[in-house]
Image (spheres, each protein chain N blue to C red):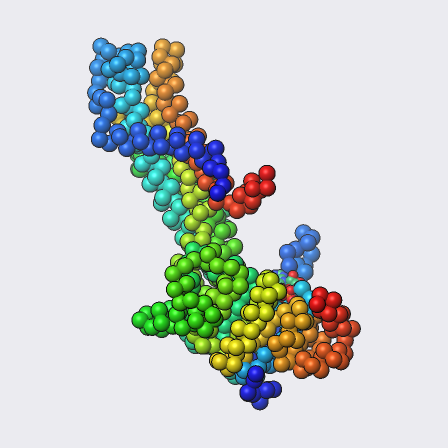
Length: 275
Length: 268
Ligand SMILES: Nc1ncnc2c1ncn2[C@@H]1O[C@H](COP(=O)(O)OP(=O)(O)O)[C@@H](O)[C@H]1O
Ligand SMILES: [Mg+2]
C-alpha cells in the first residue's frame, strides 16, 4: 500500500471542516445570520457570539457559516456544469478527430483567452449582479479547461489496446466513449474538478467583493471582506475572519486536488516507491 | 494444420498496400516530412493458413496489422477480407464483416480494460454484434473453457490474472464471434518463454478446432518458424522475402533474413 500523501490528508481535513460548516448552516446557525442588533455592534468574542458581531450587530459565525454554504453551492454548481459540458466536448473532440476536434479545441483556446472577470461584468450588466451570474461565469470559463483535460486524457485512452479491441469487436465511437473512455478519464477529470473548485471559491469571493455576486443580505466571504474594508482600522477582525475562511477553503481544495493527483498519477506513484 | 493451402480462395488478400505517416514539422516553413511505414505490400492468407510476418522493430508490421484490421485506411492499395474490399463497405456492413477477423495484441496488460470484468470484456463483441443477451453467459463460459480457463473467472478483474492468463482471456474475446482470421501482433513477445509455448500451443489447437487463419506477427524468427506454414520477411515497410517456412529458413535469399536467423539461433 502506498502512503497517504500529506497534502491529501491536510486538504481532506480542511475541506471536511468547510463542508461540514456549510452543511450545518442549512439546518442550524448560532443566530439567524441576518438578525441585526445595533446596540451590540462590534461586540468582541463572547459565549453568545464566538467571533463577535459586525457593524450591524450580526453574529459573525452565523454569517461565515451561511457564506460557506453559498460559496460551496456556487462552486459545486459552476464546476459541475463546466466539468460535464467540457468533458463531453473533450470526449467528442477525441472521438471524432479531424475538423470537429480542431474546431472544439480552437473554440476552447478562445474561451481560455476570455477573462472571467470581463465575462462576469458583461453578464452582470445584462442581467443584474447575482450569484447566478457568478455561477454562469465560472461554469463558462471552466468548459474549455475540462475540454482540454478530457481530450488529452481521452486521446491517450483511444490508443490503448482495449479500445482497439472494442473497435475490432464492432463497437461504435459513442459506445466506446461511454464504456471505455469515460471511466478511464474519470480520475484526471475529478482531480481537475477539485482544483477548479478551489479556483471557483476564490473567483466567487472576488466577484462578490466587486459587487457582481452575492447581494445583501446574502452573506458571502467576498462581500463581507469588501464591507469590512472601510472599517479596517476600526474592526480589523471583520476582514480577517472571512479572509481566513477563503484561505482555508481554497487551500483545502487545492491540497486535496494535489493529493488526488499524486494518488492517481502512476508516474508519480512509481517515483515515490523508488525513494 | 491447414486444409486449404495457397491462394485458391484467400480469406485475406492485401494488394499493393501503402501507408504513409505525416511526421511533425522539423522546420518552421519546410514541408512536413512523410514516413512510408508500409510500401506497396501484397500478400494473401488462405483459409486455415498461418502466415508469419517477421522483421525487426520499426519494419512496419504493426502498421500492416492496423491496416488489415481496418483501424487505419491505406493511402494506396486494397485490403480484401473474404473477397470484399473493406474500404468500400458501408459502416453497417463493415461492422458485420468484423465478426470475421479479430486481433490479439502484444501487451496482455493493455488489451483488457482494467475497470471491466473479464466476462464483460469477452462479451463485448457479442454486444457489438447484437447477439441476444440471453446467450452471452453461455458463450463466455464456452470460450473461457476453450482457452483453458475456468468459466467462473468471468466475474473477476484483469489484475487478478497473470500475463499468460490475460493473453488467454484476450484470445477468448477474439474467438467469441468465431472469426475466420486472427491477427496476432507480437502476441507472445511480452510473455515468459515457457508461457509463450503454452500460448502458441493454444493458438494452434484453436486453429485446428475452428479452422482459423492466423496472421502471426513477430520479430522472433524462432517463434514464427515453430507455428507458421508460410512467412514473409519485412524490412523498412517492404517485403524482402516470401515463401514456405522450411524453404526460407533452410535457404534464406537475403542477408537480412540470415541475420534474423542467426539472432534466433543465438537466443536458443
Ligand atoms: N501513428 C504513427 N505516426 C507516425 N509514425 C508511425 C506511426 N505508427 C508507426 N509509425 C512509424 O512507422 C514505422 C513502422 O512502425 P511499426 O508498424 O510499429 O513497426 P513494427 O511493428 O514492425 O515495429 C516506424 O518507423 C514507426 O515509427
Ligand atoms: Mg509492432
